[in-house]
Image (cartoon, rainbow, N blue to C red; front, side, top):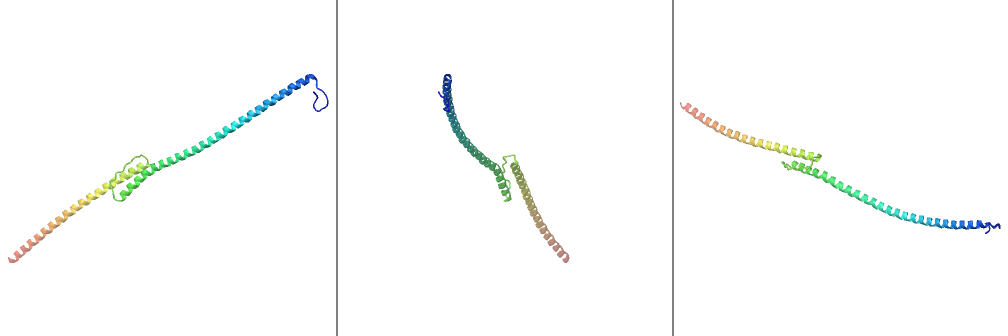
Length: 178
């Protein structure tokens, strides 16, 4: 075996065997490194595929989460509208019936919150207005009866006054004759 570079120097015999072993180890090491590189490339590709699948899964979960949040918001809004607008409509209907002259309304209170307090106040107002109107009606009936009695008394008094006047005229005519 000659030295590299073509200088013509020969290696000693033991060096040639060591060099052969070194070349064999180098080839074996190179093959091992190639296999290791191939394994790393395969692992990187597998990791890349897993990452892509994980990314797709996360995006799906993200959109699913957005959709669920949207559904929850819509349901919460519908519930709040029902909870708020139901008693409010009831209160408006009662107020309109009272404004239209219908008293003694049946007002059902189903909650103890502000709307329940408002409906309770409307029920109290309705009952008190009903009592006031009944009192006024009763008083006007009493006044009507009293006015009828006064009119009857006036008629009776007028009749007696006329009788007294007629009696006085007779007495005056009799006195003139005497």
